[in-house]
Length: 465
Ligand code: F6P
Image 1 (cartoon, helix red, strand yellow):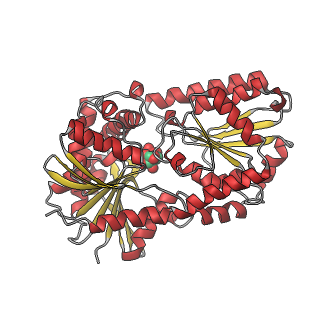
Image 2 (cartoon, protein in one colour):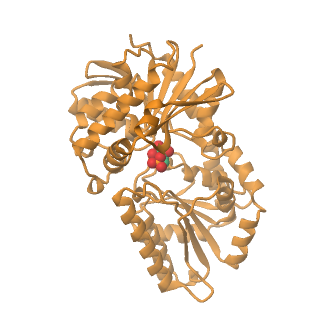
Image 3 (cartoon, helix red, strand yellow):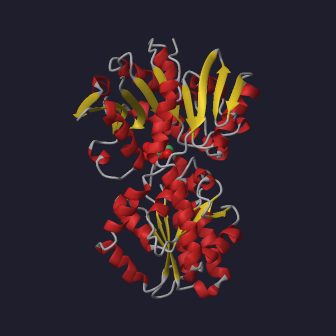
């Protein structure tokens, strides 16, 4: 039986895989432990050329090898900060207005993919299956193939796949899709993402797609591959247990006391423009404006740790959010009341789950999101006897599964504020019914199902050569 090799831009540390923090890390580690394997990727460090070239550094934990490698400043700037996060990320989230394209960055992106692939080659055995994750690594399989690697190689895209017209705003779009077609199996978060890819194959690449439900055979650029939909999930019972375990900790008691009976709306996101944070604040402001009885009686806690803060568009969204939080608070605060508590800090996973459990509303309104695991974690963390209500954007992949949520269009501030009002006033029986519907969906399609179905389908792909 072959091993599994997981490749992702960032690699969790062995310690991170032991707790239930970061569901993906737990699922991937679970799969690696089975028959042993390797988790390969960037260490997260920017290092000198000699250190980078000496890599990867290997840490063995049981049967799993964590193989990480540093990036030089130039590689980081071109591959990670540049083409991955200033071109692909905004375009794949339908924010062409925020994207920029530089030939040098694209060349750096391909160069780093080729270099990482080259570094992995010596670790691969003939019967290993290779599972590559996310938009940073679109050309990775092509680079491995050019090093004569003949193993099965699968790819899972964690973010949306844009419609062809949007994708075409990236000048080398065709080369990118040609590279994607070097994978044997491509997994998408939702059917919409898969269809957008098929659309490009048929209309732009003059390829062929043979669909069989949500699984498809694709022939394009002289290659045969498969695509499928694999909705990433969480382990709901572990989250419920963690949320309950943290429930009586001091941070929860402190928050509860400081709220003085006011209802709590919780939001947690990376500080990213795709998360709809400013629109969310505006809808909350409308609630206070249109329903004055809520003033002093409801608090929005927004936790938003900064990420990618050296990318210009991330600096701007941070400034805008801070300005809006200040403006709204200036307008509606009292001497003993602050409507928005905005915390740009990282919190421990267990603490977050217990804060979710404490709240009456989970407010998750991205403008575009591959899946959004926060929405799923919010549901799983609730107390079944007194669950909170999830207010969820129709543009999160999770909206297709969490039919018990109140679905909103985040561009519609009035509609979103009405949903908040409804969630805050919802009777217990309806809250419980919605919670049960959502929990059923989470249990049916947990993180293990996502992982196992992808790896089963990858294992069934005929070997390419
Ligand atoms: O969900 C998309 C993603 O890019 C993941 O691949 C990554 O783990 C996460 O967002 C955090 O992003 P970054 O690694 O850029 O901090």
